Amino acid sequence: MPADTTYGSRKEAAVAALAGAENRPGSPKPDAIVVVDGITRRFGGLTAVNVEHVEIQRGAITALIGPNGAGKTTFFNLLTGFDQPNEGEWSFNGTSLKGVPPHKVARMGMVRTFQLTKALSKLTVIENMRLGATGQKGESFFRALFPFLWSAQEKKNTERADELLARFKLDAKREDFAGEMSGGQRKLLEMARALMVGPEMVMLDEPMAGVNPALTQSLLGHIKDLREQGMTVLFVEHDMDMVRDISDWVIVMGQGQVIAEGPPDTVMSDPAVIDAYLGAHHDQALTDSGEAFTSEAPASGGTEDQA
Image 1: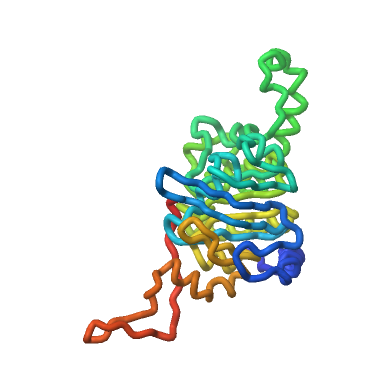
Image 2: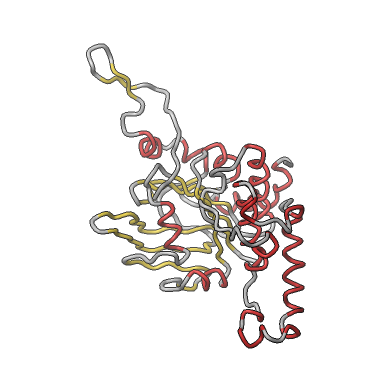
């Protein structure tokens, strides 16, 4: 994969834009594409998400991290219309998304992938790609009877799909069934299909989950390339090395709340973040008498989100 200097211009612009943002939960951003206010999601007596305020910077790669059960995936589902909160407001490009169904959210320019890929296994790769295009005239029953009404559009969609497959190095799989692909290849396919709508913002739910090391670097490069093309990226991840490598800003969730925000290095050294991942006494060891003493060396780590 090319060195980070390939993506330097956009990365430097994102870092510069975020330089004035405060390192605290809910900090305002200079050009927020997504704004969240008071979102709460309860399941019975369990409050899975309780986010007071979050802003996502336009044109930056933002990581959403947190320990197992922190509410990251639930928060993703709320933002993209796959679930609805009990209360709260959130907007994309200044337009409220409250009550907007997922397909309309995607048409507005916010698309997502899933931790478990949603490729249609009985369709070929190119057919999966064509499904990602919006506003297809041939989807109408009446128009479907008259190919001359939609054939030109389908040709254009196919050309766009082939360009993306080549970019993601999946062109050799074009006529293969999606179900025959490896887990990593399906991740690439899902990301490529998401780009068929020409989105402004791409949301990736654990893009590295289940991906073998051979494809990891390829996926990293593609995520960086999204920023280079001017898109905003928000991704859920538990691999801290990946978070340090590609993110411009990090938001940390714990027990459904945002507990920290800031640049990767700042967040990774935040005691609240370390405690959220490993418990308040992660840095203590027991003496022979059973009493704890404090170590100077903090540890870090994480587990995969199941919320």
